[in-house]
Image 1 (cartoon, rainbow, N blue to C red):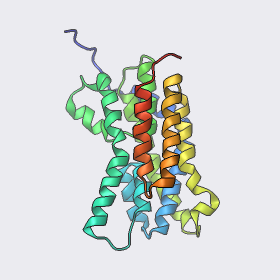
Image 2 (image 1 turned 90 degrees about the horizontal axis):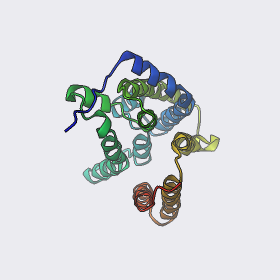
Image 3 (image 1 turned 135 degrees about the vertical axis):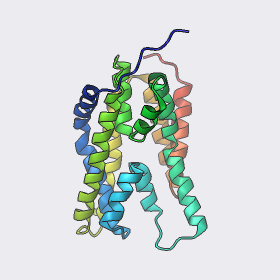
Image 4 (image 1 turned 90 degrees about the vertical axis):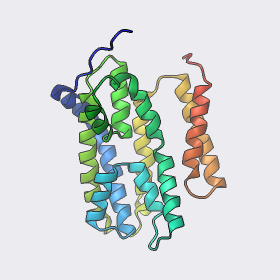
Length: 236
């Protein structure tokens, strides 16, 4: 069996990843500020909001958790919220599996701390970089560090500003999340498979949102899109 080439993790690669992530930063900053502003409406202190973003570091799951946040908790509501956020973040299992052919030869003490920085935008950028021939894992780490830092800072800024917004939805803050994900997906467009998978996921999610309460439309839409993409050939 041919030994795979070593996967470096260099400062040069980290700087490269950080630079190429910058174009996505305005959208990410708006997303983080949206979370910070929304957290004010749920009674979070500045410290609680910043710790949430710094320790959890899962934008969409944090938004979902806010929607289900309660002033008073029961074991049932805690379990329900935990299962919901787990379902939203299950995509990270597939994202990690997609990175295995690239990173599996690295020592565990490098791989697993690096994966703590996984977010949708730096994962997408790193996968595109690798598909184009790049092999430095520092690219993924550098992009992740920039993403984490801006996410925490923008959450704090959103919390500071959001206290003066009676209803964040009234000024369109709720539109930031879908706009951010659309902007993130477009650079990864490759052809027919993406068109079918994304189209089915969008259509099913919208339909389910009118039928089932809560956030089930995310899970069901994602599964439908994945199945549709899996049964679509690669002709472009």
